[in-house]
Length: 75
Image (cartoon, rainbow, N blue to C red):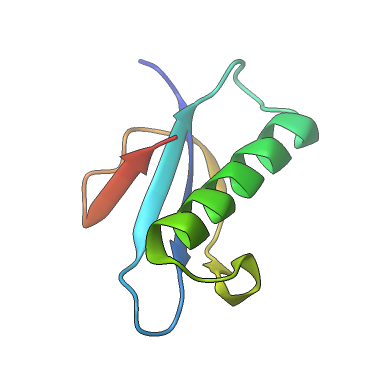
């Protein structure tokens, strides 16, 4: 089974989106997880037409399955 990094993003007056990306290894490096978070945050801000500073990062998790609840987006 493939393993994924997941992290929800939200901000006031917008819906939460849970982003996910396939991991390149069982334990992603800080570089890989940081790049994932930065890409998710940027995408969320662009999608909602808000500054990145308004985006609230949810809890990052690694070694997860594909998220199924709510709005999800593979990045």
